[in-house]
Image 1 (cartoon, rainbow, N blue to C red):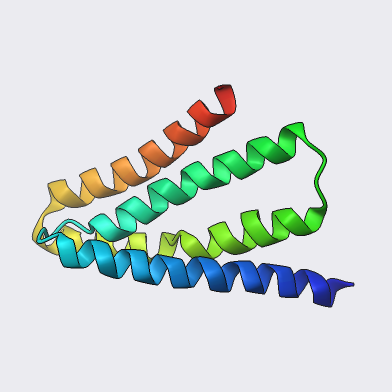
Image 2 (cartoon, rainbow, N blue to C red):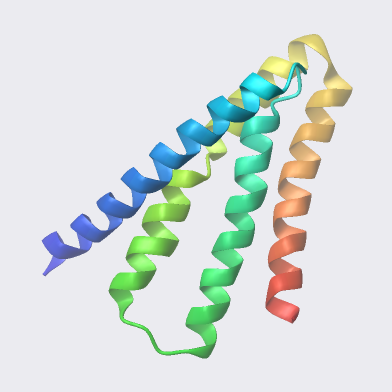
Length: 120
């Protein structure tokens, strides 16, 4: 049975990763800033989506496969902590204030929006 779990996580992660790649490229093309808006946007939106999925699972009984597909797979593939970490370190070399703002706003807004979603 674990092979089917792997398939659900893998399909979700593949979809999330592909969408992240295209959204990130699109935002990078329209933004001429050194601030990494693409990753920032993806992580904040991904946190909101994960909050919505979690809230729905909290109140309704769903098959575990949906959590593996949407929560673990899609949100795990869509959001990217490693890229955020890399971009923060890159910004540290050029603009420490921007690096701090990027990290604080990414984590802060992500947690804030999840908190709001769970409270509403």
